[in-house]
Length: 156
Image (cartoon, rainbow, N blue to C red; front, side):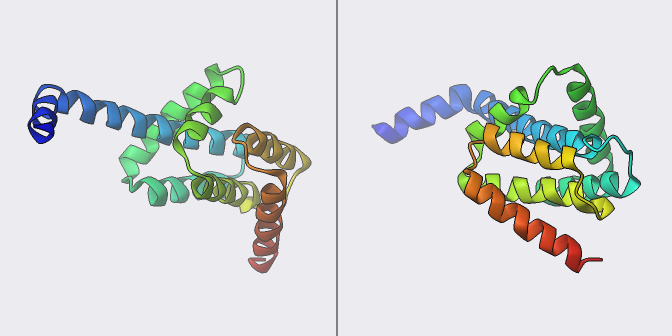
């Protein structure tokens, strides 16, 4: 009986549910890209290395091709320009990501921040703010930071 009810629901709402999941995935992609863009802008210097790293990270994380990555970045840049705060992006991510995924996001943001081989005080402050908005414990933020800085030095 339960299976037939599930089948009925899927036949009636299947496309809608799939569409909803696609919208959630897109929101996750946009929020991630927006935070990466904000991180690249945090030090007030436009670095090609930061943009290149964002492209690599987004393509790898979301399995996007060049055109989709470009579209995502354009859309996310428009959203960040129109946004008054990070809350709308971090709210999406906090609601969708588990602790380990939040850690990976923080690691990726550090990769963007350190793509130019230096950690700026504004980037560090933004990382703390994002970590707090994602409810990543400060001790975990410190651990992620230490690993990122050590990895950044090793890459020099």
